[in-house]
Image (cartoon, rainbow over all chains, first blue to last red; front, side, top):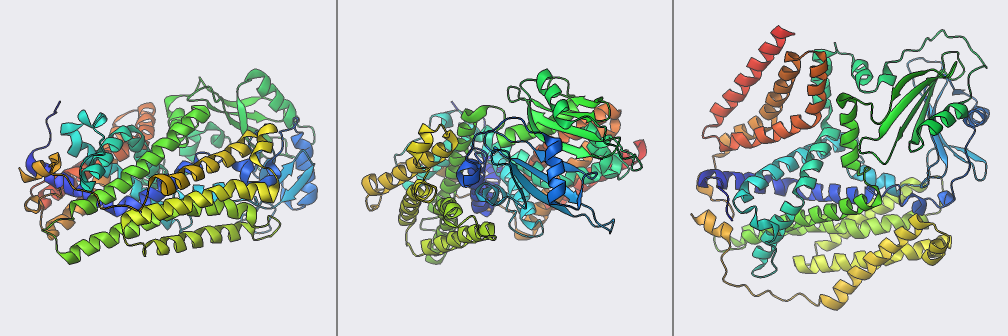
Length: 536
Length: 95
């Protein structure tokens, strides 16, 4: 079945813009999707990266007592400024918090982080000491590039990705129905890459379109916010926030008297838990804690709803709820950004949905790679000079080296997290350095591997061997071998080990058993449709 | 494949088209959304603003394709500027 396609001139123009925009963003986009795919499971592998967190979640916490203890340890803790507390979850069974420090200079803001382990009654001040999830999360929008430059690069990569998606649909519109089942491994390399690129591109289309738009929104939201605030809100950003989250609109009195008669936090939380049993508390925010107008804001999510996010603001003087924006009574305006977060971070369908997302993200990586290879193969013919061909080859090799070098580097990142002693004060920066330096070295080595097939095979092999190292590192360093953690029902630790084990076995088996030295592929005489179209 | 060169424009024309696509596309898309928002009462305006968190980029993406299809880069640049200015003037007067 054929649909009406673009006229010939438009087809060629759109085709060219698709090629150029695609080649320009390809390796950055690959890194975004690859790092992003792992970031989906950030919470799930948290206990793997943080040995201290491998504990069961304990009974309810007395947050007032905790705040008192924090004040004893951090004597200049300003309890009246905004204080954030993140309750323990199944994956992160400790409480983390973020508070402000009293400063003499009113214009300077100073803050501190800390953690509290209820299991051992241990209270530490300082940033979290592990980094795998954080590193991959930040890599997926190039946040390691300083001065927010990386974020803007990521934003424009997302925007050009949207452009590539739209032009891709226009190009393949004519054959879009047959592309659903048109995958084939027959024919020349160019035909294989064409078929991979178009068929998997089409299958992943809704997913990719969603990420292009939501990704552009997250990185470039300033482009909407700035004109909107200037035009409709008199330049006051606070008013926009108050519209989206009514809690931000509550104004507290700076002169409010000190008091010790406020309600206890735990009592208010118990009331919320009783009223909304499925609502999981994610964040507690306190303001003016020691004053009469103390405000407790509770943010959370009911995972059984798509739009399950909610927030309640409680006045601790009398327990009165000033804001109650819960699942089911939010307006469209209040729900949109939660919806974007839901589809972007895959938080609306449990673990199974995350696996689907992971699979589609890897498929997208494959679409990107096959696009680059297709670009090269399509130029591998007589009307290009040797010099041009060498250039195409070099570009392809460089792109593949950067992209495929990331896989073994991520395995190294996991190993380094446990291998670098957690007692070192610069643990996080050492692990990050190990990761980025090994990625760089791996990419450089790849340039010497002559052909694309060799390069792919070697990276797959290196990645496979290093993947096997991940469960080994965990077993040797922490003693938590996966059969032990399975028996102890620590499924997230065991799951991470088993994921890497399976990946390692698969990659090593593929490269050693089934993929012998790549042979020159025989080229058949089947002319593919694009060539016919281009000749028309 | 690759695209036939005879249909592609000269490099000068192409530079204008790229600028029109990226910058012109943004300004046209944002002024269109602001215009819609300005035409509606507060409640509707907020709905438009929040919807624009994704439709701004959809429209921008489509407006990025059109300049390349145009025969003359100057004409499409002129059209984008004209529409942006017209939208801005209407927003200025109805606010």
